[in-house]
Image: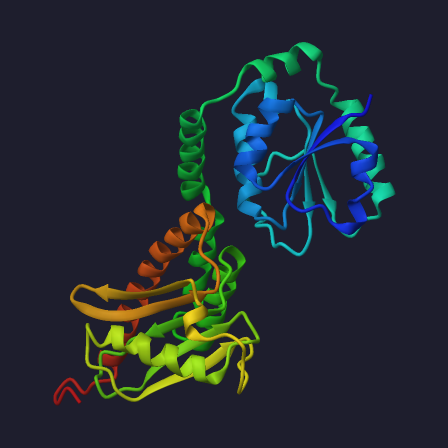
Length: 321
């Protein structure tokens, strides 16, 4: 009798043989996969991390909440996805998607034989189907835990060493954001209290089909929003990460997600964040983005204070000029 494997995500070409050698149950995401566990009681779960590393974390934590489901071997198939080192997936193994199918099959066989699930446990799983309400409650608890323990906070703490070097600071912030949030264009604006100073929007392009025309439109719309909080003049963009071309296929209207956030220090504008994507955020990306927004609020406040202190230190105490 063939072993049951729950495969979550897309089955790559080099893994097509799995459908012949095993009874494969397919699921598209973490929630549908979790429901399939209770419908089919699989012998092993394969999660394609190209879906979303946060979905993999979510599913592994859902499985660990119940003793019977925690016994099912959970395997991550990793591709090009960057997985933060200090997030624990509670996985039994991690395979590279580049491995030959024969090598992966050998590892699967070992995991199934070493973690054989007793029939009474499988029957218990099949008889215990959680309601949609129970799944939502368990999910919310995991999301709350993720907010507290996320590596994002630690990553942002490391940025303060470059608080006075805007290009380096911007590149590092973009590096963190793109690890968690897929975007086509992201922008960072650090405000100077001097109304006559240049207003620079530092940009990162995650899509080579973004043209200079779209960038100019982004710049104008972004500073229109900033103008609601202070007078802005001398507008300019600086592409500090990625490539912008003269022409491109994507129009501004193609963005399904457009976010502009002003940051305030008291009543003063300290800066702004822009993000545009041709896809809408899912639940996981929304949670992570909200955490990034909060971390940026602290960083903007500190940077604005730092700039003010640096400016006053250069003033002549007699003339204040």
